[in-house]
Image (cartoon, rainbow, N blue to C red; front, side, top):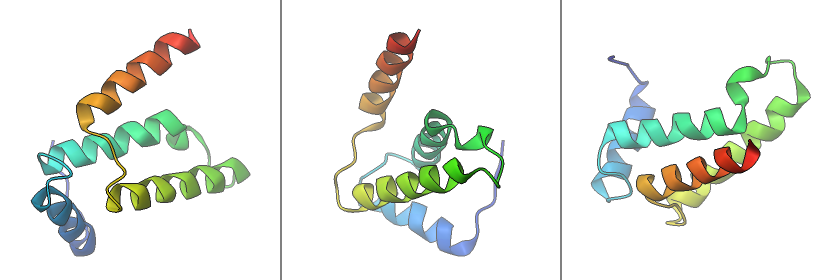
Amino acid sequence: MEISLPPELEKYVESQVAIGRFRSAEDMISAGLLRLKEEGIDALPTCDPRREELEARLIKSIDQIECGEGIEMGEALVALKRRIKASR
């Protein structure tokens, strides 16, 4: 699959990879998509008031990553798997 990003997002992804927060653009995009899935944003219609809260949490998460408070992709996947098992 190939995707296109607006120039400002492409530069942002490249900068995060360049400083070592992610090994590749694919890792960063995957982490973001996993977060969206985890938060359920894709399942909410745009008019749902919960969507605003989830989007705000996503923006907060991005800010945390920019401040160096993020975790590696492998750690995120382990945590996500634990969370899924616990919810069953």
